[in-house]
Length: 232
Length: 223
Image (cartoon, rainbow over all chains, first blue to last red; front, side):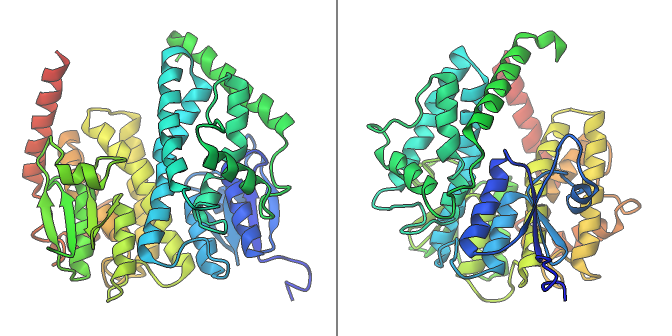
């Protein structure tokens, strides 16, 4: 039988540096689901990736019992529903809706200004920085009385925000701009430490000495492109 | 005081999503029409983060973001029909295509309405073709993405049909054409004729008027 031959029924296609892939890894770990991990080279996409995600051709892709699911939000909901123990989402419909709201908030109001902090300079960067700080302030408020966004244990929102815990310090180092200061956002600071040291996350992070040059190179590339508008 | 309130604006397809979901579930609600071009105090208080409609207020607690609202309606009112299918895998399918529509196709339609042509036309045609394939697969020969009854994905895409028709008129080009996408063409008619949709879906003529007024207003404010 397939399982006896060591074949796992769950496969995750990903790349080492992708925070979206990490979200899925954390969710699988929390649920205790064993899986086969396949490292993709996005410059040379495998036939498997193109077959499993023909619409977007991106990672992560989760394959469960031969059926593929793409888009990290869709995958996380799938994982929570296919393996209902250790729920990632709260039970109550309103709290569930609020968890989804915070995930969308990250997409709309936090990720974009953070990206612009990394990839722009001068006035544009200052505006992005102010916008990011405002959004981070709302997260700080949301953590009142809670160890994690999910309460006492890691939930969907923690997994969704999780990459910020290791990416924000890298952005701060590259740009010289402070985003999460202990005295201004103490709860968020503590959340970052708690999250990074939790069993689900420990050992999963991409090495900083590989990530930092990668993000620094992205910044250089975007700044160089901005200086040459006639070539766009 | 009504237990369920919905703040919206009549031309907004995202508001229509919430209304169709409430109507399908036969939930009684008070609909509060926001003034076009303005934001009421209740809106600003209920959605201080985004200051956008729709906002659903249930027992005094506000919720925003149309698809979050639709899922909430499905989960808070368990009476049939279920808007999302039963199996985790089928739910993933609905969610994937809903995200595709909102992230890829809807912004493309906006660009087309604003005059972009060329590659954008091709992308839109390709996108519609993908939706046709998704429809054939998900409907399994029945009338809707949700099967016998309107579901999450029907609501996500269907509530944009008015604006899709506006886009088609502006382009002089039919995106949902029976010859090319027969499944979607039939589905579109059934969706618009459904009792939960008919009567609240704005007429294409009125959406055209609103759009043209907004374009004039935008040009004037740029001078």
